Amino acid sequence: GRLSVLVGWRCEARILFDIAPSAFVPPPKVTSSLVELIPRAEPLACSSRALQRVTEAAFGQRRKMLRQSLKSLGNDPQALLAA
Image 1 (cartoon, helix red, strand yellow):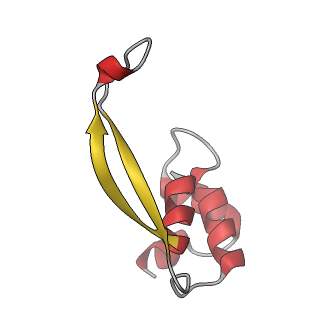
Image 2 (cartoon, rainbow, N blue to C red):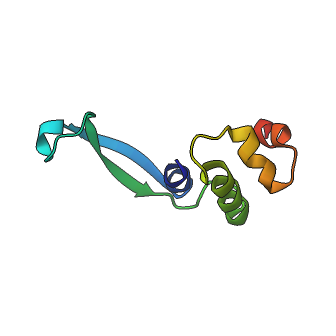
Image 3 (cartoon, one colour):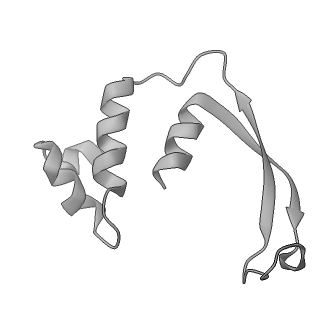
């Protein structure tokens, strides 16, 4: 999702350990993990504004094809995906 992309831009994520569903009430149908976020000295090279716009377009609506979502940016979505 969008949050994962933005966090990955600024931090390195490392899974520390898994947490069993029985640790929660009600228990979820998935296994959870505790993740450590280690801030990067410098964010990965890209424009903050561009990353915000692309992730907003890509993840702004549920159940939509990425190519269709990126059309809102006004560029050729195929070229944007290739880049």
